[in-house]
Amino acid sequence: MYKGVFFCTFGYGELIPPLRMVEELIKQKHDIVCYCTSEYQPLIERSGAIFRDYNAYNDKALIALCTMLIEQNNKRYLTYKEKKDIEVLKKKINERMYSKYKNEIDYKEIDYIITNYFNEFVVSLAEEYDLAVIYIHCNFAYCDEIITRETDFAMKYFYNLDDYYTDEFLEDYHGIKKNKSKYDKIIHILFFNKLLQPFYNYFDDSYKFVGSTVAQRRDFWGDELTNDSDIANDNIYISMGSVLSMRKYYLDFYLTCVEAFKNLSHQVIINVGTENKKTILSKIDNIPENIKLLSHAPQIKILEKSKLFITHGGMGSFQEALYFGVKMIIIPHNGDQFITAKVAEENLIGLQSDIHVSKEKLIDLYNELETNKDIEKSCRKFRNEVRREDGGKAGAAEIILFLEKHEKVYTAKPLII
Image 1 (cartoon, rainbow, N blue to C red):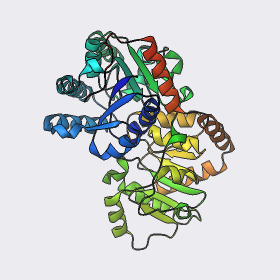
Image 2 (image 1 turned 135 degrees about the horizontal axis):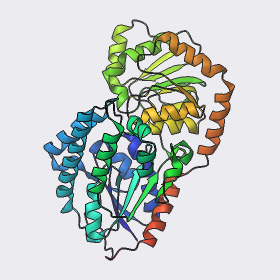
Image 3 (image 1 turned 120 degrees about the horizontal axis):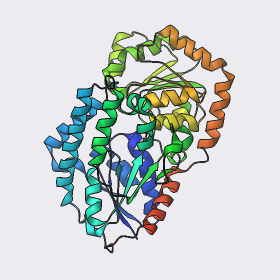
Image 4 (image 1 turned 180 degrees about the vertical axis):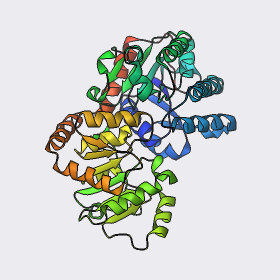
């Protein structure tokens, strides 16, 4: 029996795929403790894992650093100075996480750590105690080959850089890489099909593309939609993600969507968040009958009946649309969402626009998707591909094989955390 610790990241899109894998590992008699914030406790406990709260330690300095990092990463483009600031923030966060969790857990009693690629502090712990590191990727990944051979692409899409020179970027990258640990008891689990990953042929065998977990995801009704009859067939569904949907930043965009689609015969469901819903209702006297504004949306249940999904392009939402063969208009905000939009257009599964799209342009995009037979055919192809995948089971199987190959020096004891 193996024992593991999972240092989780925040956001449903980053948490749901690996939790499906955790659930499979627990079925194989693994003991796993997950550190996260309290709003995700029910999800974690449903997987069978033991929940521990990051916030229980009330580390205000760490919370402040993480908040600053999130705000920086939410920008579309970064300047040279902003990138440097982010590197400093990451270093401070990892140093603080290392000092906090070094003594919190008896690492002689565990075999592996699951985390995302940002948490570099786990490598220091892994080296010291001969632990396996399982890096999870719910978004597009990059490797040395992409950085050095496709540098312009990497600068624009992976690093969001605006005012960088290639030579300067590579010098910085190699400088950071030189100081990184050479520890190699590491496996990468990527929760998507390799055909979606740009330059997938550059990745070595430590990167395992296990596919999506959409088929195994659970969804729950809320107060606004209570059963299937509330959702019409061939609906148009609009959501900017579990985090971004709630921001006032999107308010004008939501109003544009109402104006663009109010005369259609199709139901239009818009996930706007609680505060945005109040504001929209105060601005529009009579919401059109075909428009339904939600504070929270059971996305899987809606997409099962959708004909069009207007999305920010997060990888979780993207794969859910692929699973149901739903055409997309992608309105990327930052980071990997621009890669998603590029991948969607290149594979004929959607079109791209931006947050300032006019109602006329939105109608044009809708009409193009309605009449483009190539996009319809491509959506069916990817639907069939994604429906064959079970990233949770495949990821768990890869981890078990990896652990069997790299037996730990210490003998695992009952987990006490």
